Image 1 (cartoon, rainbow, N blue to C red):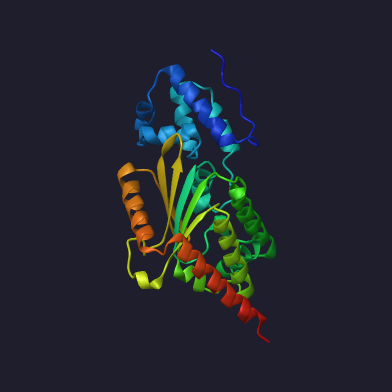
Image 2 (spheres, one colour; image 1 turned 60 degrees about the vertical axis):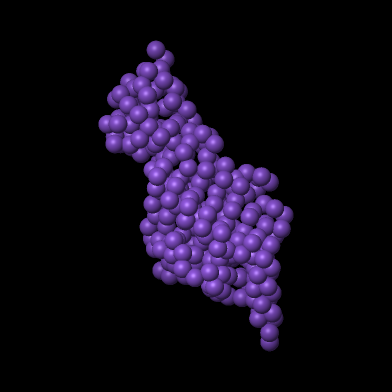
Amino acid sequence: MPRPKDLDPSSNPRALLGCELRHARERKGISQEALGAPLFVSGSFIGQLESGTRRMHLEYARHFDEVLETGGFFTRNCQAVAKSKYPDHFAEAAEAEAVASAVREYAPQLVPGLLQTKEYARAVFCDGRPTATDAEIDELVAARLDQTRLLDDPTTPLLWTILDEAVLRRRVGGPSVMAEVLRHIEAFARRRRAIVQVLTFAAGGHMAMGGSLKLMTCEDAPPLAYLESFGTGRLEDDPATVAQYELAYDLLAASALSPRDSLALIASVAEDYLHEEQRP
């Protein structure tokens, strides 16, 4: 029986690795549930690996090689594609985001990565990593800008962002940087590339006060939720848990300003920053 070819890590490696996993599993006649059970992961998780939505870790790769008799194929290729340009706590979420058909996000403090400008991203990283070298900051900014290229496609993914009013008011990088990033967000929304809402301070308390929330929908895999706080992040795929986060997001959207009123507020705050910058 021929073995699958080793993958070229430069060519969408995770999706290719997932395709080979599905091929090898089906060839052995093993269900997703049966393959995942010894690893204490669900069949849906195996499905996410096969669709390229989730990253294959080394311990999983070794198990697949043993059970599917693939001669070390998954171990070799898993190691080849393991490196990520993103921080460890965000890497898997960023990779899932890259293949998502829809991304819904609540941002409590900062402009979400997909909507950041170069100078805003630089200010975020400089403030968050005060001892980092210029080279390290440049590398982080480059990775962030590469992330924003997901929005180069005019329709995919669907992006729906709820910004807490604190995002608009927090002066990251100074007035000119804030004016630029808010006008950037406004432009995306006005050309219907993103749905943007603002949750004002007047809305009061809500279910997501503990941190940011990102929901990712994929065409051939169950939805995912990513929660992030200071220096940590967690990707959730349990359907019942994700459903609770989806409810929280729906309630946030119901409490936020309408997209039209949100754009008016964003434009107004951007103008305030511009006028402040122009004062002698």
